[in-house]
Amino acid sequence: MKLEDAKREIQRAGGFRVHFERRANGMLSSDYFPDRTEDGLPLIGQAWELAEQWSKVNPCDYVNIYVVHANDWTPVDGYRSKTLNKYPPPPMESPDSVDAVRLSVDEHDA
Image (cartoon, rainbow, N blue to C red; front, side, top):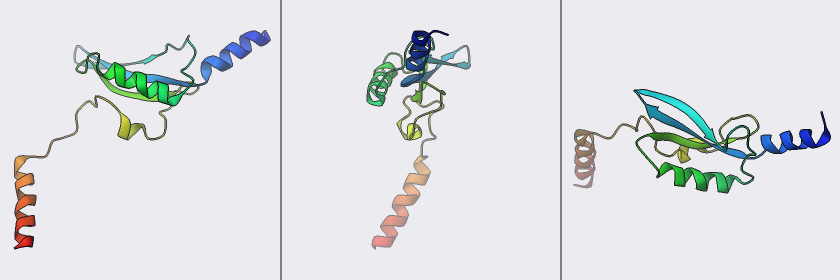
């Protein structure tokens, strides 16, 4: 392998990529950008910025958007709390449980 080819592969593997899943026909399929044939994004902040922009393109179809390391495709630290357009969405509190908490707080204050 030529040195220039090796350097290009190293650069392509470094950096970050945006992971997302596409909802279609009742299934989720994973994808990334930049594509595996392209260089990774050099800065993690830049990757999160693009992830946020991508999350607004079509929030119903593009879900579970987060940043991964370009070299091994593993999620970056803290990705769980930063994941955009989570699917399935976290369960919402039922009105009954909210009222029960309010009632117990009101009883405690009395």
